Structure formats: structure tokens, C-alpha cells
Length: 473
Image (cartoon, rainbow, N blue to C red):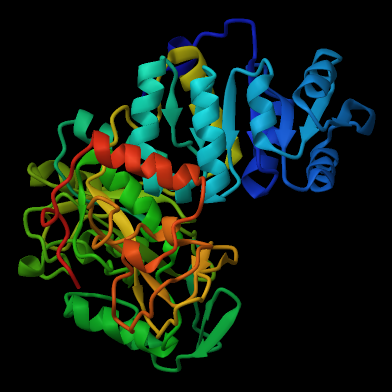
């Protein structure tokens, strides 16, 4: 491994970070920064300043070291006095002497406004709001490069971590057949109880032992048997597909098909599951270079994949891989595929790596040149009426009634699919039938939207042609 302390030598001056969004990700970054010699967070923006203050107090910042400020001038004065300035709008941070903005609101429109303003003001941007990145990330990366600053997704979230793992495998000369991430929640088998538990729900599975081992069985059949007891429970979430779309645009990989397989599988089984159908697995694309997600199945006494990331590589030298298998590296039963994985993602704790790489090394951790090869779009699972608002809500920032799909990118113009998060929180101007892909003309374009404007700039800068990429499902 690279000695990162040598790559990013301490300059003696901490990176001054303006944090936008005092949620889970932001709180972990604040806590990490308090003991980190190379990172300082002297300013926090949140639409609810009192919440930001409470987060700072909970993280260990003294109350007399926090000041709520309503304008940039007051924020600059508070920061100069050694206090943490709390402001209600991320745009106010742009006019302070921070070096870098971490945008972690998850709000597509707000993230677009703040990120563009920060880049134009000469600040680096670490973007945790994948929702916005899925709409216009490549354009912001280009804009940042033109301005001589860094735009990057953060380590601590799966896209940047997986991009790093893919690049390391390629650096070693390994062929990446498939790359993926674990979903947020595990499915846990409690054998003594005859139950599966998943995200607070339980399911009776008295005969689940019959589906526990693959052991040379028909892999797709076993996977179907495992998933059946969970019924309509969603084992795919919008963030999962959104994050993998970002990986595709950074690496040149592609979905195996637009809705993803998302199997229920144990970590040790991944090389057997994610191999081509022609060799007993589930991948439709025999040529490799695809992405997918997995729902981690485990016993209650087993380690979780913990929302981690992994790659499946082709074992060209099977003798070496048999040696590795003896050391505990999962290898497929046919001996042709092996697993490399990073089983953790540490939210804002790991974001420190991206912050330092950007500000001290001028290096993004998620790739320099993302290109808009794929979009996240929505397919209606129910009928919508003109006039309905496509409310985005919940922990996963979903639009109820819209199934996420990852499809080859097209310009966001009438007749073309509207990117999922461009549609969010906007009003429909047409009825939508179940099974229809939401298109641009079905949605009322919001006035003065930075998100829609930046997407138009991206479409102009990166002409795309439909029809190359993922298969439809």
C-alpha cells in the first residue's frame, strides 16, 4: 500500500472546511476533525441552525465556541475569533476564508447551488450529496478542473471507495469482471428461531437451511428460494442504484441490466454468484466489466459486509488463486473468479482522506474525469395524475411510486427520460401510466433551478447517444 503520510505531507496548516448539512455524515466529520491535525471545520451550514448547534455540542464543541451567524461578514468575524460559525445557508460559507466545502445535505437543488458557487469562488468541493452528482456531476468536475480546484466524491461513501478498489485491482493487473457494493441492511438468519430479520422486520423461514448453502446447486434457483419468503420487501433502494451509476460514470463499467440483480447472498459466495450465466452465475454479460449490488445474507454470529464494496476478478493464474483460497480468500467453485473486498465504509471519518487529497494533493479520490455514460431514471409503478408533486422523502430520499433504473444517458430534453432527482419535488404536468418511464415534458420545469441549468450545461458539454450501455429489464 502507498504510504499516504508521504504522499500528503503535513503542511502545518489545517485544511479549513465549510460543512453544509449537519446530518449523520456531517456529524461524523465534525467529530473526526476535532482530533485531526490536518483538518479544521470552522463553519457549518444547516437550514436549521439550532440542529447544527446541537450536533456540534454533541460532538464535543464547547457552547461558548459556537456562534449562530446570519450573514457572511458575521461568520468571518466569528471564525477569526476562533469560534465555529453556524449559518442557515451554505451559500454564505462561500464568502468566507475556507479552503474546501463538504456538501452533505442530500438536497439536489441546494447542493447544486452551493457546489457551483464554491467552485466559482475557487474552493474545492467534496460532494456527499450523490443525488445531485447523479444529475450533473461530470459538468461540475469539468468546471472545477477549468477553475483549478478539485471536485470529488468522498471516501466514507461507497462510490469513491469502490472506484479506489477498482483502480487498485487494475493497478495490480487484474481483470475486473464485476464491481459492487452491499446494500445498507443485512438479512440475518436466526436458525434456532427459524426466522430471517431485515430492517426491523421478521419472516418465518422454517426450511431456510435448505437454501443456506450453494454447494454446486443451481445458483439462480437457490437465490430465488432465498428471496421468496421476503415477498415484496424491497431489496433494492434508490441510493444503491444511484451510487452504482456514479461508479459507472467514473470507471467505464456498466450495469448488467437496468434494474440490477441485487441477490441475497453470503460474502463467501460472491465469486460464484457474480459470474456469467454460462458458467453457472447470474451475470447476463459474459464479457465482464459490470456493476451490481448484493444484499448480505449472514447468520447473527457472522461478520457483516457492512455496506462495504467489492470486486470480482478473473483468476487467470488458477494455481496462485488456489493458494489464496487456502488462506481464506473467497474463490468460485470453478476456480476462475476471486473476491477482493473492503468491508467497511466509515462516513465522515473517511472523508478526511478525500479532504486532504483534494486540498493538499490536488487529487480527487473518485476519479478525475467522470463522464455522463449513464443516468438514474424512474419508471412508474403506479398511475400518477397531472398536478401531483413528486415528493422526495424518507431516509433514502425516494419518490414513492418511481422505480429507479440505470440506463444509458440521454440529453434531458422533451422526449428524453428525466433524471430521477431532476424530477424530485416538482409537479407533474401530464398523467403517467404504470410502467412508463418519466420523461422531461411530463414534469414542470422549476424556475431559476441551478440543478436543471447545470444539467443543460452538461448536456451541451458532453453530447451523448442513446442505445449504448445497459440492457433493459
